[in-house]
Image (cartoon, rainbow, N blue to C red; front, side, top):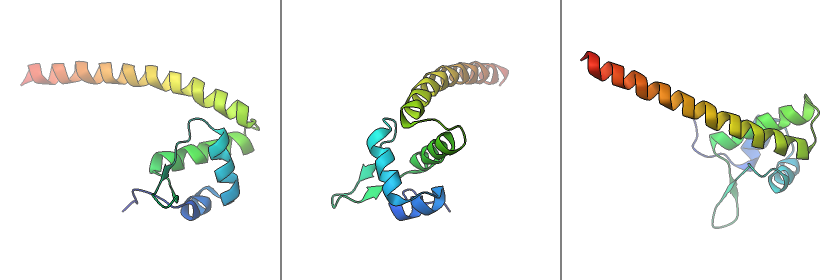
Length: 102
């Protein structure tokens, strides 16, 4: 069973990065949007967790700067949107074919 939200302690362990580094990334990476409770605690969803792992990979392995990570994520977002649109179109076509075959 997976959690809906993770605390910064959980995320820190799962990503393998210090809490202060994750908080710093939040201030610099535009795509990283974190939910806050009324008391101000950070909550990360699964999408944020995957994004943080991607950021760590881009910084550590690809040796990008934080500005480079922002550029990469904004460009990949455009690519993903067009890919999502293509997939959606293909799924609609497939659904139409399935409805006709009934």
